Length: 74
Image (cartoon, rainbow, N blue to C red; front, side):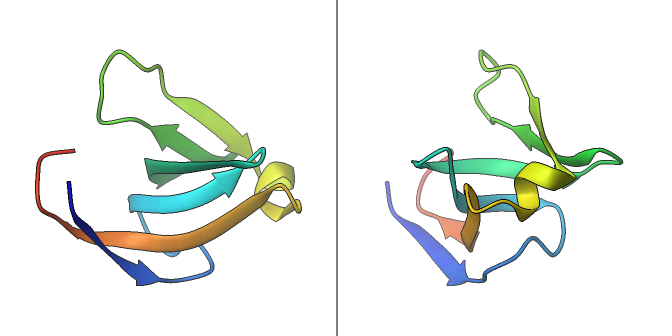
């Protein structure tokens, strides 16, 4: 599939982001939570998980962009 990504380097509001965590590149929905960020896959076979504020601020986590359009259902 094709996707258009708006380059951003931080989480601004809920949406689908391209980000690096634990040296893996991921495309997931990020939602603000009290603990930090909730990571939700649009594939329901994956359980949502949390990134703590500490993890979000660590070297291990980097937002690369926000997905603004996709050519197919993700």
